[in-house]
Image (cartoon, rainbow, N blue to C red):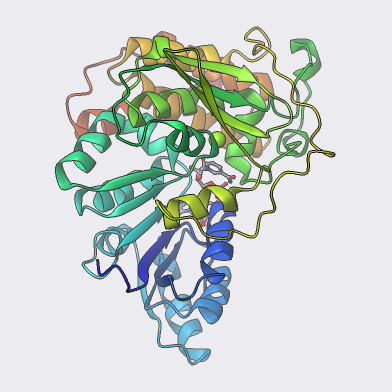
Length: 392
Ligand code: NAD
Ligand code: MG
């Protein structure tokens, strides 16, 4: 990449919450960042609206049935953006020669293929899609290592840790990393109080505005569980050296503790534009549209241990990580099935962790020897989840 030429970006998941934050930062620096590709799942109209503003060379809709509408819509607007559809087109743009940076912001295991394609092609990979690391963390990290791809985490906690770790990449004198968790909308509640919780209540996060799936994950604390596994892979950190602390204000985004007793933390407002700006410009810094902290307003920072009795999902994730093999892939798939059912009022809030626990108790973990083994485990877990929902 020519140092003076603008970075050419493929944004996968452009219509989502992370996609919107990324475009906000990108639009502030047209001399540094150019959009090559915008990709979305199925919302053709929303994708066309973004194309009108950002004039990408390619627009990809993952759902193949959206192709005609996308193609016609783009040409009706007089845009030169080329339409494409389907998983192969996503992978092609994620690994294209003329793309420097891929922002992996698709939600769920659906993002794995394109994330792996970007890693294989040696891209600068801004990784929001944490599910791909939970599903295939070792494989993804090995793939990136082999190709020379740079992974910059854009999950806020991991981005904070990325900023606080030693610049030389040697974690020898790091004693542990501490992930902060907001505690979600139900912090302080007892289990019995969560029986009747609705999707609308679960997605109403106190500090962050995010997509539906991750909002529910934050409410169950499964999000923190996925993030512990994510951190384990991203930073090569043993599970025993990863801690979680609840910090309701979401100002301290995570911390790194060193052998000498120092703890470094990254602080900021809960706004993903900061995280994305770090990823886009690293090792430079660029304006993100997010103001610094106001110490009159943010005068108090609280910390407390997570309540694992009320929120068993976090422990389930620690357990799946300890089991290893295909267990984390199954954890992720079971959770995706349960959250999707909860959002469609086909599963209760407490049923989400009950389904995941039942699946992990029933299904055997196998060695995560290949991508095929991981994908087979993912499918088995989804089948278990569907059956569980039918019978409970
Ligand atoms: P979202 O639901 O708002 O957006 C998801 C995006 O993925 C949309 O653009 C959608 O079109 C696309 N998509 C969905 N299914 C697809 C498929 N099968 N193929 C291709 N594209 C598909 O989700 P989000 O909140 O932006 O989260 C995206 C990812 O980032 C998730 O993995 C989430 O865990 C992670 N993340 C999000 C935040 C946040 O603040 N929103 C923070 C940290 C990490
Ligand atoms: Mg996070």
